[in-house]
Amino acid sequence: MRWDDEILKNTLKTIYIFFIIVVIYLLQLFVINNHTLFGTKPNLILICVIVVSLWFGLYTGSIFSFLIGVLTDILFGNGYGIFTISYTITGMVIGYLNSNYRKENKLSLVYVTLIAVVIFEFIQYIAYTVIMGAYSSIFYLLWQMFMSSILNIVIVYIIYELIYKIAKSVDNENDIFEIKGRY
Image 1 (tube, rainbow, N blue to C red):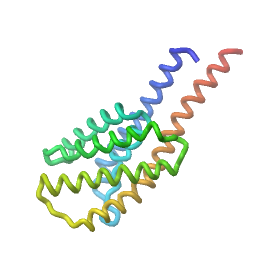
Image 2: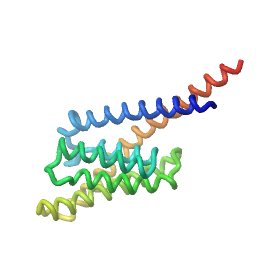
Image 3: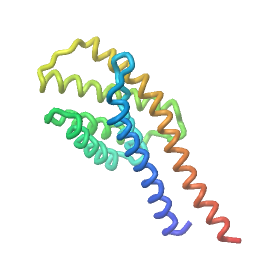
């Protein structure tokens, strides 16, 4: 494979993944934000942080998580930067796990999602308790972690499969063009 083909392939993957993330973010904003299931909303933005941090690693995942956190604080936040802190730390931890993660292993995706949800919810709980002075029961935190984990594991699996198939199809499509070019 030539150098130009590799750049084209990576650019296509990035554009497709970016488009999916924008759609997911818009779904969170305009559809899911108004609905709950057992008092819990699926966090599609956290799922984007998980997927980007797993696919692109610590540095890209951290930068993406920071930017998505700032955007979320602007749209949903209260001015304290709680989402920025929560998403950035979660993205850094998941990005750090990237080197030990295999994209084909579905059970690892479940574990990583559990870790991300626990980190995110715990940071949110501490931040709202300390910064905002809003006390909430530890049982509420545990319930939130449990329900968010279940919802987000189901959704992250679907989204991750979609992104994985798109990335594989871009790889295969370029390989087909390379083979046809030889004959």
